[in-house]
Amino acid sequence: MQRRLRSGLPLFAWAMLLASPLCADAKTKTRAHAVRPTGVPDPIEEDSDLAPKAARMVEREPNGAPKTRAIAVLVQDAHSGEILYEKNADAPRAAASTQKLLTALVVAESGFLDQSATVQPIDTMAEPVRLNIKPGESYQRIDLLRALLVKSPNDVARCLARDNAGSLEAFAERMNEKARALGATHSHFLNPNGLPIPGQYSTARDLSIIARAAYANPTIRSIVCLPQLVFRYANGRTRELENTNKILKRLPYCNGMKTGYTEAAGHCLIASGARPGRDIIVVVLGDSKGGVWQDASALLSWGLMM
Image 1 (cartoon, helix red, strand yellow):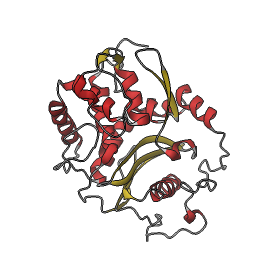
Image 2 (cartoon, one colour):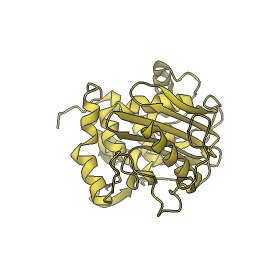
Image 3 (cartoon, one colour):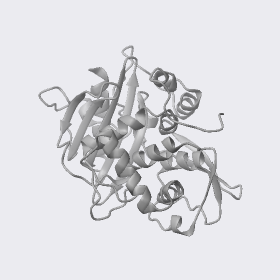
Image 4 (cartoon, helix red, strand yellow):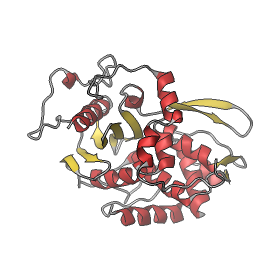
């Protein structure tokens, strides 16, 4: 491994990442998939949370996109940026933990991921999802970044942010600067984890822009595809972290990206998927607990088959 892990490989590296041993091995160990000759199987039907009842009879929009119950939706080609379908895409919404993709992007692009970050007391002041890292412990940034994107712990988000910018407030400024530079100009971020705070919001369109940039980052792409990983604490104890993205382990064409939930935001998911010649990003905001998996699965399947 190079001493400095940096983002920014050329575009031809994207396709190579889909076949990377890290992701391919992890998904193979999790489940064997039967794929149709088209390369895009039907959404699975054995999991009640994931199986779109619409897999048997789908209500569709005029352009053929499956109808969804989510408040805001956007389906985008990850390469060209073409919008394939949108619903309330510019409505300001709480983004919950989906905004951790932006946190991860800022951290990944800062580089030096093989160097250590030392946990401070302020980092641990986060509820409700925590990894329970302790003040004084040191971890490689890349290990914290992996935990952030797979399990979504809020204490890890705070640690990475504070380590990156010196304070949570300074990191929020970096988040907003990065969002504006990407063209996500209808968002305002105030913390690295997406927990509710007055004045923090985004839109499905802005999150798709951020997700597209994250999808192009090789470091992030190599992480969000992992169904699980083993995190080693500073004292040597290990813990297996299951990815919060349910459809990742059950739909073979899904290769990421990030879940989110708060009462204010509802159930949210940014999902990505690929087949030869096609990469799709789906943003689903303000859905129900079961509906978010069904809607994202149906939209991902539709987008990849277009």
